[in-house]
Length: 280
View 1 (tube, helix red, strand yellow):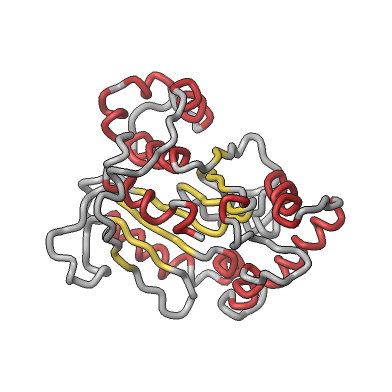
View 2: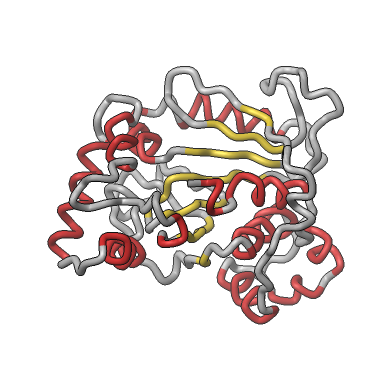
């Protein structure tokens, strides 16, 4: 099994931070994913039943998935899917905005957005994917700190590779929110355009036309210090590490414990941006 690298320094601690916020861990090794939309059917069906207060046959679920696939294939920058996502009077709600905690929140690492069946060729794999009711509507890309080029490289890859690839268009019509972090504090002067900065955490809503990246600074005094994080069982954390292909021994190292601190820059950003109530 692998030992210390970018994943163990940032990605796995960030994944655990989501779990402290009450998200569930979704393993790629135990999933049923719709190829066309990358929606996790094993989460989507029970979530639909819960938020709509009735049972759904498999056929009904596939009808909803087909509807979503039709919407995200539209060349409309995701407008129709966004309207459907926010439609509170539809016979089938996709998200419960009246009772946020009624929804299913989960994260999955390295979800391949494939374009051809039976091969990952040509796909992209965000580090941490945020699933709401099984739908991958956000992701977080993380990079190791103290590497000045990584944030700009991520911005460039987003703007000039992913958003410009026609094969990816439907996925970015589905994805509502993307974020980036190299687990460092912002530079002292953040008046500089984000396209020039080299450290920090950033977010955007991809639209395929003019996508810009924004800073986020927590305005609520004491928000992180007073946040009521869930306590994660050590054995559960080790099981997540193992599921991601790493030795569970890293969990007991000083380096990992430092990276896993809730007060690390990337982890603070996750708390601010992805708290369930705030996110929806």
